[in-house]
Image (cartoon, rainbow, N blue to C red; front, top):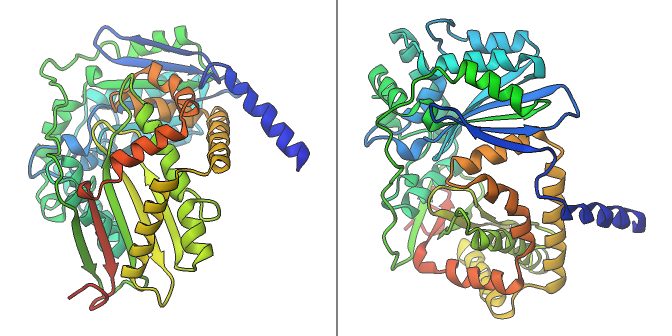
Length: 447
């Protein structure tokens, strides 16, 4: 154990080096407005190629929920040069893997391949950035696919439906209250014309960020990017991403959701919380610590110790915070009570522990341990080139800068216990929260 601690301490001492410096990070922009980030890591002849679009579910037009995710699926249906599914088959034939994902703030497409296949990846990704072909039959088939995805992942899962309802209650005005997958009634009406309109509006080089990470040289990436992405015409009608914002919250909202499929009641409380902002990441960093202190580990956190071990009230407790977000984010608690413990009792215990924390503050030793764990996790992240590419892409499409990404580990290490208490006082305001109970049909609180 002593040797392990010595090794860990020695490793953590490396954090004095530039943050996230597993490789040199180079940035530039093409003449058509496409931003490019190159992260060098020459340990293996592998490259991660990612194209991030500054658009997601929160940018959808009214009554078209789910169109961003729907278009993500349709982007694999072919172009004027590639048949349906051919891009993925070519990636696989070259020993690589590919996929895509959609969030509220971005949509990303990526391939992981041998470094000498980078040019081929750029050629195909540039092709579908501007030359997507959508056959009516493919659109109809893929609409059924996303409806089945919703049925499987959301409609058949009471906890997923519960989280969806809770988020809709928390975000009364902002589009974050609409699920990324979309509302079923609106998904059923999505058309080929809807997909093409979204594609033509948002899928353009000047609305995209190319992130290339791995065994690459910046000058080679620039040459390939200028060859494949450079000729693409930019969109001239892009507008600032201005979304409706949340009005001031003056009263807590509460909800009870009944579902006959629920076997284990649970409660969730979500608060509106500040996100990481360019040049001002201090509050977000303090909220990362607050989540870890209150509910990061069942064995060591405030809620875990008090509710799971000391008083045997809950089988699970947790706290979470989503730092990277273009607009207002969330801070949440979850408690799953033990058999024989009511949700009212569990909520009273949760409130008591929050009040106790607000009065006494963090345990200094626990705070030090969490700071060490966070520093270690930032160092270990340098070992995964895919994770680095992902970090930069998510940050840059959420309004942050390269400098913010590189400064983030140091901002985290600068957090003090006073900083944590200041954000706790600001965020843990029941007037800006929604408390939800998920219960069996006819269960507690249903009347």
